[in-house]
Image (cartoon, rainbow, N blue to C red; front, side, top):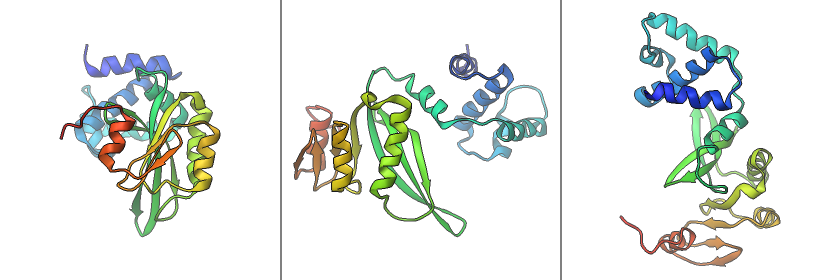
Length: 210
């Protein structure tokens, strides 16, 4: 059984679509891993079958025009494959330029074996740091989908600080660990620590392999 067939079977369990759309999504996902670009003209040749590339390209266009992929559906699909009842979350952001416009991607990811899988996010029409209101909105999106009990701990860097933000996290009794060279907050305790020491405590490791 190839990867596409396995993926189709998994998608059928979570998406209430007809088979043709599920197969198209599976082809897209597999092609993204192969081609490593979101350019549809390059994804189309990676589709299986004997149809002309132009036909695959038009199929991709129809898919993205007609199908509304709800972020909450994708989030539950990703989390369903994780082996734990609770999740370690990581909050981070990056700035992009869309033409001459600044855009900030603020994302919340599930961390599994050192890999962060983005599951909820906000696009902010600005550059620079996020504010407390935006962070709360992001975390509330996760809570609305999964519930606060799904959160084991929250990781972030020293950008994500502030009394109001920490007070909000405390209302949910979250464990949160902030990894920087100057600040560590974990189980409500604050201490000056080196980044190495923080991760030793957070992940209960005896050593870090470089």
